Length: 315
Image 1: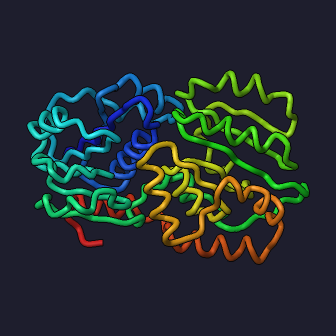
Image 2: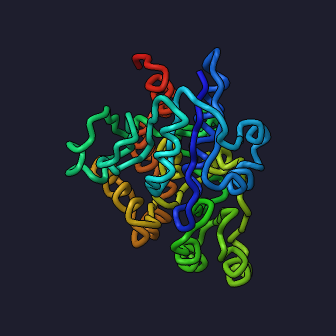
């Protein structure tokens, strides 16, 4: 079976969907016999740039040029023109995190949460829904530590990351609050973050803050983190999977809605609660309870479940 993962790239929406497509593509190629999955999108150059740090990624990236048995469409914006073109290239079209139920091109939809439920009755295809379809990086799944770690250094370790782009400049908003706190802070700056240099110049004088450009080894950093501050995308779900307390700050209306849907199930923290988390990072009971609740919410089986849908297998 030939499978195309189409990752739409648009300014202001980050790069989480491109990384998701890479993880799903790699999973299919490594775990399903007699199949080949490849990645493309409306900006192949951007995909190459973002996936360059991953050694095996370039072999999967292609220009769309042939027929596919299944096309996976993962884009923050529904481009009807692109969908119509993809429809001509594939006999079956599955969309991830897709809420344009009025479309006539998509056969099936897999959503982490439904952000347009009132219009769902306009869609005649199958809709799968829930965080059980979250695509978690393999390095996160293989992380040796899925538990609360209390640092021996006596200060909490805080990881700040708002993805590849950070269109709302949340990084600076958060760092401005952390620079006066007693904490060891690591700030990951995305490859597309246009404010990176100005943030570094403004806050590099604070010795407790370390700035790092995009790091594919985020699993190790998450595993050694006491408090995570991030957006409402892939990293949020990965942090929940590992189990440390999280402050989630949405970067657009869709992330805000997704964060709200998670808050209806588990406790996520506000930036105003930062002092509480810093003061309680060494509270073993608090950390264990948080970790247990988070890890029960995201189990890491999303790639397998989506693959089962693609190949019409029962999970």
